[in-house]
Amino acid sequence: MAGVRSISVFGATGSVGLSTLDLIRLNREDYTIIALTANGNAAELARLAIEFDAAIAVVADEAAYPALKEALAGTSIEAAAGADALVAAARRGADWTMAAIVGTAGLAPTLAAIEGGRTVALANKESLVSAGAMMMAAVVQSGATLLPVDSEHNAIFQCLAGGSLDQVRKITLTASGGPFRAFSLDQMRGVTPAQARSAPIPNWDMGAKNQRR
Ligand code: NDP
Image 1 (cartoon, rainbow, N blue to C red):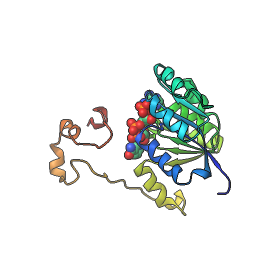
Image 2: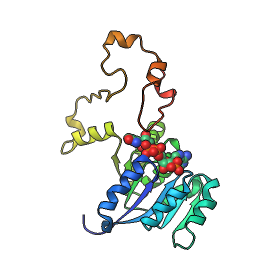
Image 3: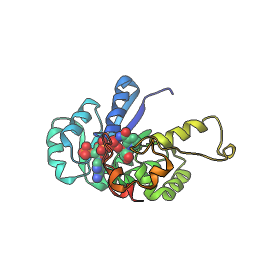
Image 4: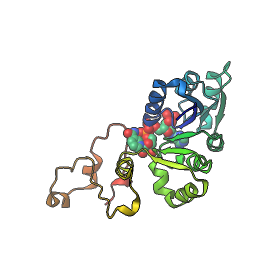
């Protein structure tokens, strides 16, 4: 695509956010950065905002605002804090928004970005799980493009490339790993939530709720 694209990264200090910025670094001249956000990690957010010359840096946790403001002193980068500021940043209309805040805190800014009618890359599956119907209605209404980033969603998306949904009879999702991957059906009958919970997950605490039977 010709021209410089404007980008916002929500959850810029997290695993997905940092990977996104790694990619942007590879072709830095093709992008301008509008908003970068974090929850409370003001120091890292300010470092990234300065490196990428963002227009605005937002921390969700208002207690982190003084540190962010101080770290950005002497730059032209705006600092802001709080849930409403996240939504306002999402309304600035980036061509392409990465929604990589963890948990349902990502819902409101993601929805605001969708309402802008541009492209939203969705890592934050929690927003889809908690408010999928509302989000998809907003996508239809605004004409936004919603790109799935999460692995299973993206795998299905890639399988559908070049085809259309009415050519699909059935989608089968297999488990991608976990402690019970090699278990037989018989062995599965005896597993407990405690066993599932003890499985090591590299960078994410799944929490007990996900494993309830
Ligand atoms: P991380 O925990 O690494 O990063 C989370 C990001 O969200 C950080 O920038 C964090 O800021 C910010 N954040 C945390 N809480 C809040 C809040 N209450 N309000 C606003 N911002 C907040 O998460 P990941 O990058 O691993 O995951 C991000 C999303 O992507 C999740 O929805 C996850 O399910 C999904 N995902 C992740 C994958 C992965 O491999 N990591 C793969 C597929 C999907 P701070 O640094 O200040 O805490």
